Length: 230
Image 1 (cartoon, rainbow, N blue to C red):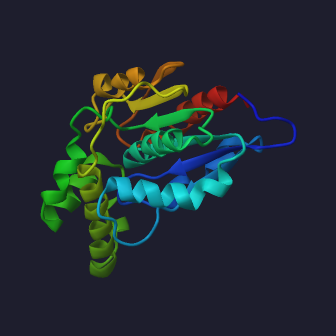
Image 2: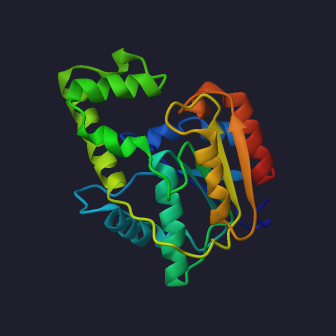
């Protein structure tokens, strides 16, 4: 899939819970000039629920979504990307050319990240380190640690407020990526996204855990370049 000669295909990247736009550092280099990688910062401030977050995001991004684009969402970001497409469908707005969803179970299934919000700070830190390849030293001192865990807890709270309404499949191709050793998302749960597309759904198991784009860069980006047609 490629954009027309007059436009560059934009890939909007939606980060995992507790993360930020830096989760997509290096993606532009890995994907080359045929794709413009746009890391998205989720709207700041308190949001009563997941739906309110997505509505604010849809309003903020609307002017940039009228030319060819795709969305990649990782973990919580996959749910954000999916709900953004649903909302734009309901509004009669342009949909993404493809949805690229990584490290998240299909929305109708329970996901363990929503339960992690009830852990103490020490338990939440241990949980984070157990599911990622982030060295403990990167959590920084007490102030940085508290801020990071606070943001993670708030993102997990928002995920827990999501409710999936039965709807017809999206008229958008979906590519689902899952780490073969992901402790949070069984392959079968990721594969269940297939029913969410009325066009085409493809499943891509990638070696690694929950953060397989970092753990298996060459495999992941080669697959992504093939999908995007560059």
